[in-house]
Every structure is written in C-alpha cells, then in structure tokens.
Length: 161
Image (cartoon, rainbow, N blue to C red; front, side):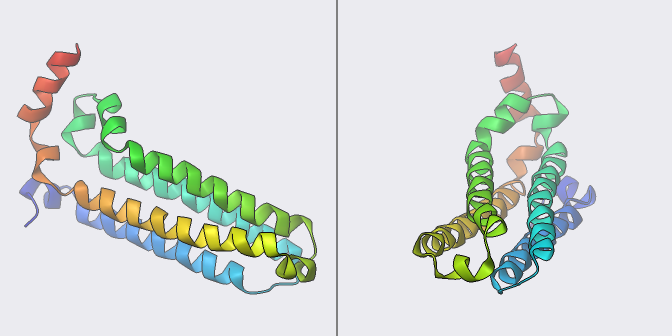
C-alpha cells in the first residue's frame, strides 16, 4: 500500500510516465538493431534516444522532487541515496554513444560484419538491462514511506547544518 501523500501527489502517474519512457528507450534499441541504409534516419534515432535518456533522468528528478529529501533541501543526501542510479545512467549513456557513433560514421554493411561492433552491441544490451533495472528499482524505492516522513529527514538536515 502506498502512503497517502505518495498517491495523492500524482507520483503514481509520474512513475507510469517514467515506465513509458523506459519502454520507448527499449523500442529505440529494438529499432536501431534493424539494418537501415538511411544514415539520416540512424542519426535521428540516435539523437532522439540520447534526448530520451536525458528526459528519463529529468523525470526521475521530478519523482524525487516530491520527497522530503528535496522539500527540505537535502540534494546532496538524495545524490548519496541514488548514487548508483546516476552512475549507471552516465555509464550506460556513454556505452550507447560508444556503440552507436561508429555505425553512424561507416557504411551499414561494413558495420554489421565487424566483430568488435558486435561485441559492443552485446555489452550495450547488457548495460541497457542494468539501466532499466536501476530506474525501476529506484522508482520503487521512492514509494517507501520513509522518503515522505519529514521527521526522519529533518534530523539529518540539522546534523548537516
């Protein structure tokens, strides 16, 4: 059962939006795996996916904004609590760029037969699963009542200041 303040503030809707964004990222990964001969289409998909990753991070911050951590200004503590998510997000986006940019620079036929790029795609696929798992887990962590109890975080704020 979700806390009343959690469900009342529309967090469930925001979580659903986050999950839809993650599904859109899955779709971009699936579509990009299909061989396209149009380089411009590949560039558009790549740019849209990078922008989507930024939007996913922004949506998570919107979810985080409703917690007592950010209501009383404990942004540093929020970063500590979700440090793994931010690291995974940066690393996975870097892997995405490292795998996709070479395909944008070369022809698609040469690209498909390059063993190094195939290994890169396998690494990217595993990293994407970790990326999705990290966001789902973090969003579910935000449903814990502790993030919405002012007395727990007020003490932490007093200790910091």
